[in-house]
Image 1 (cartoon, rainbow, N blue to C red):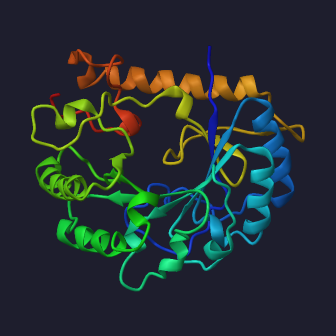
Image 2 (image 1 turned 90 degrees about the vertical axis):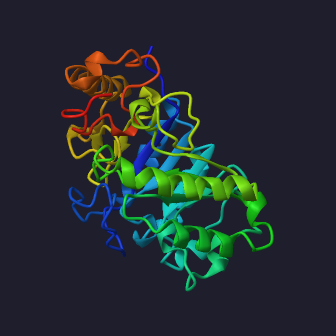
Length: 305
């Protein structure tokens, strides 16, 4: 049975930054999700079992109806997560419940960052997406983390999610990524800072290496797929350019079961594509690993697992 309880929306495809590692900049169309669809979409999703909404972009806070939209989302969803670079002061006006959270792009948290935007004394969770690409300066990342975690309450409030640059060929850059990754993760462990790994990594990337990582699998789970963009197109996930279908037909949202079928077909198709490459030789494939958040990427062609 196909079940999911969370969904991503690309609330706006506009952004106030230009990150070189942005995974969807090349297919965003500059639109805002129509405000008059927000309540209708919220009802549709919650009536079909969606309890958690992940609000992405672009940059969600640049939508002209951002604050009103948060109120609508909180009316319907048990948990609402805002993914932000926090450059916009509207993040200061965001009112969260204890069940909600803000996920910050750590690239923008530096000496000039307004620490009030972390809202450490307010309800809800806080998380930093700390990207460690091949060209990262691990020392700089650690110095910026050190600055944040000297703040009162930061260690109790903030969770770190380490990730890689989804836009680079991680296997070709493995020798550069792993030492930097280890340095950052070792710092987090030494300081007792809560941390985990976002974007599940293929097991063959780090098995038989000294990479400091302990996930049980490298799977992209079906129940976490799905993203609805600002034009109300369904995509496999937020970093996937292919439009699976438009969510509107004859002026109404398509049946939820049809949306699930589109996602499941694409999910199975991607498993088949990976299996026809090097994953054919892998005893972990589709048991402990299917490529994780790199499932959609053409990264297995030339490399042995």
